[in-house]
Image (cartoon, rainbow, N blue to C red; front, side):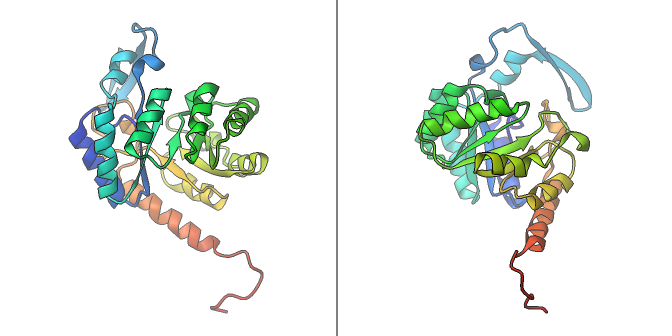
Length: 261
């Protein structure tokens, strides 16, 4: 869901419920502090929203979508009530501690924070299963992040293949990275999917992805920079259906006749 909630907690609760109804296993937010990554308040950002081009201060955009500790408690409770796991992406040690306080079972970075090795070490120190997204990263940068995580005693690690382009054209997905990540770093791998449709998710699962992450909204006409390329509940339901079919088709690797045979 990211910042598609626009800082509206009632909308956020509806988004969680609709994501759960559409078949999501987990819902992810961002519990950042804007000051952690926007130092210059004069920086402007131009994006598409509600069919029009909008330009505004980056600082103002992110500030109105910040989640405080009380918000996180509400979101965690709402996720529990809807039978989905709660995840969030922190940008500081304080953000990590807030997630521990509310009882998060997982923790995740944003691709733009893969090079923030002190934060990755802090995530590792929690002992929580950790998801690291690798958008924009070189192989050396990924290796540095994995080494930082493991040298701090981090446990379960999942690396996500990701292309930080919205939406991502098919020729830039490079889904073979999913198998390469798992092999090179001896861990589980997955796919942060910024493409349109469900097709890439199905290919990713066939390549071994154990997680598929997808932007989600209840209505593309809502205000905000990410709404227009996010999956609607109907589209996400189709993606879940196709992924479950793919898992069924993959079946067993045992070399023997099937029960039907």
